[in-house]
Image (tube, rainbow, N blue to C red; front, side, top):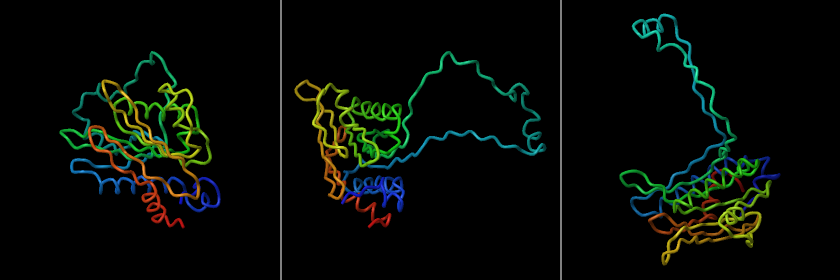
Length: 236
């Protein structure tokens, strides 16, 4: 049964991000038991963005030994010119996803499962970045599933995504939902198949189709993998 991980009492006992991390890992493990040879699923979890270039002080002797024959001009710190412009650039944060790849000469992304996090909803820039990512994947023909169990913020990415594709009014599946999207060409037309499931606290999660680019459609068992994640987190 789906729990509310974002309000007491559970939010005080277990951090939501631990459950999301465990759930993404459980989904990847389950898919790897179902996918045919040449395909594999891998979790990708990133909370926040930190890019750090660290500099370390060395002893004068080590530094002198290494640089005694070096060109002194190369040791001068580079000062870049002022940028031509500085723009606001939304960067997606709170990434919790499972990516499905096809192993060819190079890995090819064929499907993505996005578990919505509170950070995806907390600011307009983050909401725009999340939607842009999902739209980009779909425009490339990659199957996408969005699962939203966040109860503290009401943004409905499913409705906003369909609005981007020209659907003015959509019967929203609810505040909590799981939806799959499959870009497909039929009779010289590019179409988008959509599956919608409403999620409710206290009820089981559904099984959704997960279409893969250039490959099969596999079942995504949300309830089985979710319960596995809860057991591993000792959530009863």
